[in-house]
Length: 158
Image (cartoon, rainbow, N blue to C red):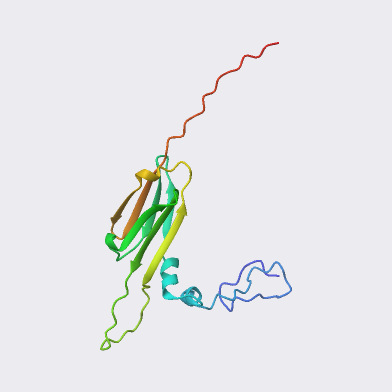
């Protein structure tokens, strides 16, 4: 029984019948990530999947940060729809291919992307702000102040 996973080798179990073996075979291990991401999907879907967005909540606001290198602010939209759904969309255009050029590798994805986030009840959807700097889109959604409920002491008789 192996207690230490194999670092080198095939990545298969050393003992198929050992349920505690840590070096379990991963059927996707030898496939390139790009192959898995694109199998059954088109390039536009890959652009959506590759749009990384972080969402953090501060005491004052919900802050969304999206990595969108090479895009101009005119090529994207930030909208609030259906009351509480933040939608970030845009289109990354592919470089035109010239028949005289020889391409050795094409890894940058092109196409449309769209991400939606349901905002919580405390979001001030009328005060959403967006800014673009160094290929990072930052969307700030201020939060409403949480009002503490009025607590009145009740006199206990008896």
